[in-house]
Amino acid sequence: MTASQNPSALAGAVLTIDLDALRENYRCLKARLRGAACAAVVKADGYGLGAAVVASALREEGCRSFFVAHAAEGVSLRRALGDGPEIYVLNGIYPGAEDDCAEAGLTAVANSAAQLAAWRDAAQRLGRRLPVAVQVDSGMSRLGMSAAEVEAVGPDAFDGLDLRLVMSHLACADEADNAVNEMQRKAFDAARSKLPEAPASLANSSGIFLGDAFHYDLARPGAALYGVNPTPGQDNPMRQVVRLEAQVIQTRDLETGIGVGYGHSFRTGAPLRAATIAIGYADGWPRRASAAAWYGGRKLPFAGRVSMDSIVLDVSSLDADELAPGDLVELIGDHQTIDDLAELSGTIGYEILTGIGHRFHRRYRGDGASAVPQGNI
Ligand SMILES: *Cc1c(COP(=O)(O)O)cnc(C)c1O
Image (tube, rainbow, N blue to C red; front, side, top):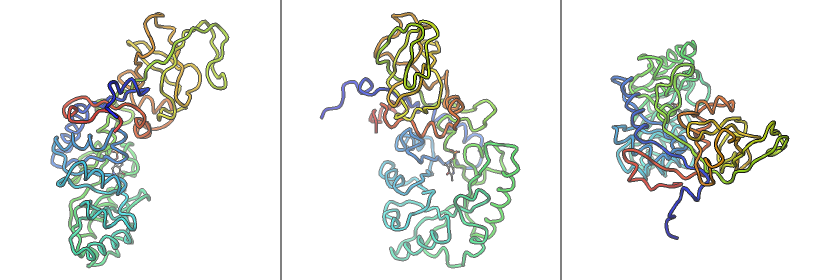
């Protein structure tokens, strides 16, 4: 098969990823950190934007540490980046995956005494030193060693291992006034004092905005790099990285009193011009979002329910010849950000980002984009 002549026409929708904005977001976070280093969290395929592309662009900005969730993500990221950058596996190494992870040069995040012991055993079995991070549970009760487990870590627990990082994760970092943040910081310090000396890491995107005391040696932003607001309730300090556009399939004129879409949940109250666009909930667009599309600065509200592969818009505000099949309307961009859409659908920007994009044509823009194969990679 030859490469498509017009991939964006084959797909219903186009996701444009601005690598310049991504890089600028990285520089902005790094500037806030002053002395501390800045990693990048690229789990879930770089929050849906393509982990290999995102990580390669950020490496050019000087990023040396990357975090993924699953070992499989780490193995494919290592293939994309080659030797050099440190790749941490946040969920730790699942039983039986130790040899593959050692081979790929991944750094295990040990979340429990059992994970730490299995990684140490692998190091001894393979006869080589393996890099490890220890995650302690400072109060989120999700992943990490409890205070009791930390207390029980014996002097030989790190035999054959190279302790690179002691880390923990904040449960309420997006609420700057929440007392849990300070409580977790103290619990983190208490746990660190019981472990061998190593660089420390606590802050995710929002954690960076809690102040210097939360920065430690390495910050681990994900969402903010991709344009999600790390300071909810205040202006978004980050640049938008993604734009989502879907193409018009057909238009029609409807009279008053006509039902539109499943369940006829919408009925025209006046003559209405409708356009059906090629995106639906199977593309990760939230079915609950009663949002709008935008065209030429004009707002085009949804009419009726979101279908699996299509959505009907009320385009009455446009002239009849203004919008034709094949034209692209904007669904995420300056008029309607990821955070706006999250608010409209009762979720968070993270879920919107990681949900979209697997069925779209992906187009990269900005410095480094020309080296990337464009498409659904
Ligand atoms: C996902 C994750 C991050 C990144 O969080 P953001 O809020 O996206 O910045 C950092 N650390 C851990 C442990 C995570 O699971």
